Amino acid sequence: AATLAGLAFANSGVALVHALQAAVGGATHSAHGAGNGLLLPHLMRFNLPSCQAKTARIAGLLGCDIGGLSEEAAAVLAIETVQQLARKIGIPQQLREFGLNADQIPSVAKKAYLAKRILRVNPRQVSLQDMQEILRAAQ
Image (spheres, rainbow, N blue to C red):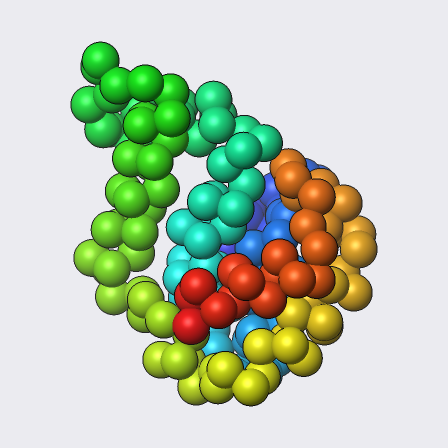
C-alpha cells in the first residue's frame, strides 16, 4: 500500500499539506502520516474557497448523509468527518503534541514555503502568512 501511495504521490503532486508536514516533521521528528492526518482538516478549511464542490463530494464518498445539505454545509461536514476519523484512529489533534512550540512556527512555515514544486499544485494560492496562520490553528 505504501508503494502504491508513493507512486500516486509522485505522479499527482501532494500540495500544501505535505509541504507543511515535511517542515513540521523536520522540526519535530514526527511521523509523516500522523502529521498529514493532523494537518489535513486545517488545509481542507484553507482550500475550501477554491474547491468547495469537490470537498462537498468527499462528504458523500465518506458515507455522510448529505441529502438536503447545501454544498457549503456538505463541504464543512467532509472536513469535520476527516477530523473525527483522525481522532478516532489516534492521530494527535494539535501540533504541540508532536513537540512543536509556537516560537517555531515562523521558521517551519518559511521552510515549507520553499517547497514551490509542491505548492504549485495546491488548489489555492498560499502565502507565508497563510502558512503561519494554518500552523497556529493546528497548534
